[in-house]
Structure formats: structure tokens, C-alpha cells
Image (tube, rainbow, N blue to C red; front, top):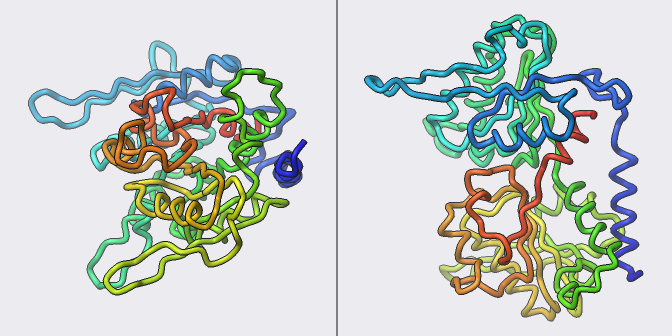
Length: 361
């Protein structure tokens, strides 16, 4: 096996060594917690997959998310209450999607109701925290919505034990400190999911003639980051890999991406970042890699956070087509990833296996 296969094994072992058997919330891999699952509309597919995976552990209670025709106000009927109340004294897993302000308010109303229903515990899975990039301000009066949404979550009625709020690859780790009181942020990552995905390809015996273009052993032998923040955040997940860091420099009126550390020459690069929006930064980082002699470049971003037309530019025939050999994302933001076509440059990883692992199943 090539050297990068060994690096993948090292990274996987590091992940396994850091995985506790028992979580802060007392859940054990040998004594799994059973959940009643309530899902926002975009996360209903995830709820269904969880129940199909283990119906004894995950009971999906479908909710009706509606509006009153005359006022447009919320008319929500949570699942699991009738004809028999299955929610009282149960552990509730709430799958949230804060993709716009209206749905945030609707889900807060549901969460308040759940907290007032004499439940045993509440775990809120918020895979993508879209306000996380608005965590600081430089002008008085500008609202730091990363803080205000965290305050709202922290102000939910207490249920006895702390609310567990699971957020994948939150934009900055400092965001966790906006949560307080009885609501604790559990900042988890999808990088272990990526590592297992890459390792599965390396270990495969696929004789398909196209396998060489898909096999990460052929496309990953160094990890790159578009800026210093991404390298500090994710670099420790990749022991054994050469690391390359980019950064922005100003040339006249323009800010361009240059390589600050490491060399991509002759290497097959995987650029890692937490999210893609317009794709400008990660595209320019890829161009810098190729200009410095990289053989090919693949991208991984946890969150497909941009508008769909921006991401469609990476598809075949788009203005950014051909920049990446493959663009890997996860479905933390299903409102966008559900619309990405299969078989093109994007490869969407399902977070469910990682969520199950992180829950302590």
C-alpha cells in the first residue's frame, strides 16, 4: 500500500484512541439510550434512516409542520403524544435545521413544548450552525447572531439534566462559549467520517477501470488548508500526512491566495475546510496548488452552505468545472445537498454513521 494508505491508518487509529466509551451525558456503548426522534422537515429523511437502522433504539415520531391559513402563524403538532403519550419520561432526540429565520422560530416553539413535557433528556442535533460565522463584531450595534441564537437555546426550559446540543464542525470553537446555563454545546466533527470514507476506498479491490479516478489512494497524499484557521482547526486530524497551508495576501486592490507553508509539487492534494459558500476561496487555493505543481486536487467541506447556483458552477459545464477531481461534502445542510446531482463532481457523505457513533450507540 502506498504511503498515504499508512497515513490514513494512522489518522483512523488516532480517532479511535480519542473516542470515549462513555459520554458526558452518561450514555454507554454497552447500554445504549433509546430515543424518541422528532425531526424538522429537512431532517425527516435522517430520522427515517435512524429508525430503519435500529427501530428498537430510535422511534421516529413524525411531526406536522403547518401554518394557519388566515394568519400564517405556526400550527405545529408534535408526534408521539397521541393516542398514547410516548414523549413523557423519555429521551428525546431533536433533529434541527436552522437554514432560515422562519424555521428557526418554528423549531424553538416545538423545543419549548418538548421541554415542558416532563421528558427525561433532550439532545438537539444541529448538524450545521449557519450563524456560526457571525460570532464577532467590529462595530457597536451589529448583532452577533452566533451569540443570540446560542442564548435562545440556553434559555429553553430546563429538563433536569443539561441540554446536549450537537454541532458538527462549528465555524470557530469559541462559539461553544456562547452557550451557558443548562445547555452545553457538544462540538463534534465529520473528519472521522471522511477518514473512514477514504480508507474504505484505499482498502477496496475495485477492478473498475474508473477506480483510479475515484480511489483516494490515487488522489490524496497531502492535506491542504485554505487559511491558517482551517489548519489549526483540522490539522491534528491528519497525522502522517504532509500539511500545506495557504493564506491571503494583498496585491494592489486584490487579495490573492498564496501558499505559505509546505509544497504541493508532485502531490495529490485534499483541501479541507469547514464550509463552502461561493467557493471562491477554496477554488483559488486549488489554483495555487496546481500552479505550484500539484498533480490533482480534491476538496472536502463539511457544510454545503452556499446558494445552489454558486455550487452548481462546479458541475460539468459550469464556470468552475474541472478545478477539482472530486468535491466531497456532507449532508449537514440537506436543503442544499438534496439538490446536488449524483454522478458529477460532488460526492455527498451521509452523517448518520458519525451521528450514531457520537451519540454513543
